[in-house]
Image (tube, rainbow, N blue to C red; front, side, top):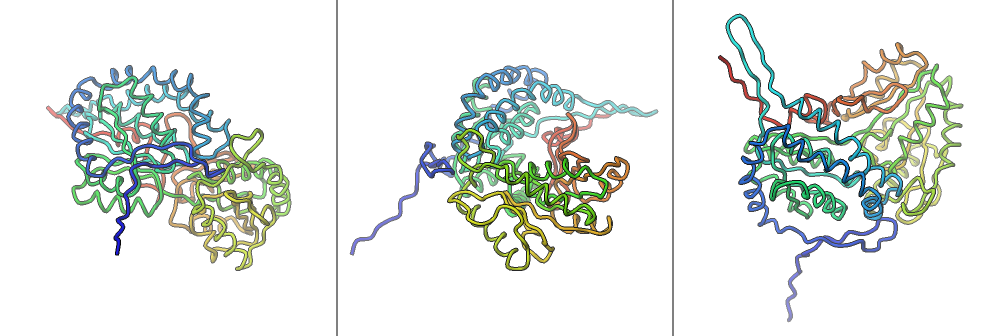
Length: 458
């Protein structure tokens, strides 16, 4: 009898989610090699730290123009590997470059020491590097998410080992190669693989873990990090609500709902997944959503005019379809989309008559589905919006800014937008509440989470 031993794959194969065709491959990093990669990062970290924030920022400043100049080359690879429409993919690369100078200025300012004095003591509060940072990033913004984790860590004086999603290794490697054109050796390294490599990196001799991904994976990372009390920053899932009050601009609210529910095929952490509309304007709102949903074009990201690309993989597509099917069986009504969903795609879908008994109103969908529920009283809308373990973003639409602000202050979310998305002005934090966040990014306080606070008093 012949015994066959299963071969361990040595390469990650990246496939176009629209076609299943191979885009390329990268070698899988053996889990046993990760400790040595981390050791090299630790060896060069003191020299990188000695430069200081301002000089580190100067070293990285040319990266801004490089990202802009190469956006047209990076975009097609990003689109082909992840599936999003080509203009959005090019825009992702370009935006990273355009925003980088301002980000670098904010980082340098955030890492300046603070001086505190009273009648007896002067204290200097320093914001020093932690050491080696592990950045574990997702596939939905496969260039921007590494960028938003790597740059603050580097300017803070940490060295970085990046493990990008196994779904999008090629664009992540292209990003690392570009950044490394400006860095000394071993300051930024990349490891490729799936769960085994991620677990090995979390257990390695690192000081900070920055993770963006699912709540379940975040819990595993937090548990593993607890053994040595590693610092952890987690941006986790969302189930973002939108409240539309009776004095809202119905057309503007519906236009936002369609855009924010369906962009990137709904594969956005702050996608609008639950919409609560005052019953007095619900018919008009739903009609407008139906009209605007019908204008969406589904197809490969490389096709001109496409607004909705494929799901990242069949597993995610099956999850979304199951949520839709289960909701319909429990009484939800498909008022837009639905019917046949082409292979690898989900047709943008609007569900009405949804309730919180349905899985689709409780658990993250991460697909192009908008669920619309009606309310009579604002208190009811607030209660339903808060009826979730998640708390990343939320939105309130109203013609009365003061009224909308009062509702916004009652929502259990880290970021709330009024008549707009939840993203804030330059310099504001990107922060989740409840089980959507553990620590946070951006803004003065977010940047400082990449550092060790150290107080010297005299």
